[in-house]
Length: 123
Image 1 (spheres, one colour):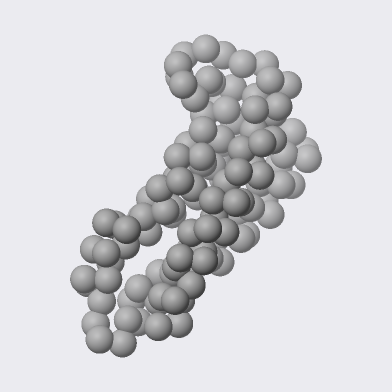
Image 2 (cartoon, rainbow, N blue to C red):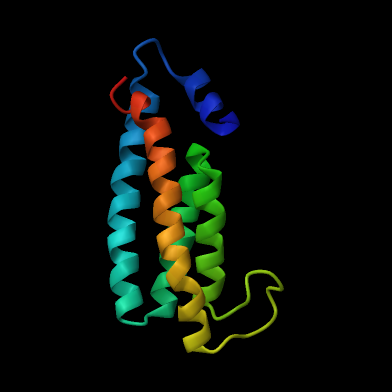
């Protein structure tokens, strides 16, 4: 709420700026989830890392912290690095096994954020 509150402070009376940011975030997130699903099916860990990094940044910029954190985990796992220790190397199979539930979790987190942001979509 803090980051999004700052965005609202930059907005004019018609909320055009925040509305366009929310709309762009929705579009980016939905497209990124599709790409993540495809990358997971193809076992493309580097693509999963890259997409996690991308959506982490978009989520951070609009203040969607839960999605940001889960995407950071996906980013590290895509590099076969344990997201907690950031040192331990994982096998591709272990990384994919850890990413699978995160993909489900991040979509649930996104839905909750989207419900909260919806009133600002076409404000």
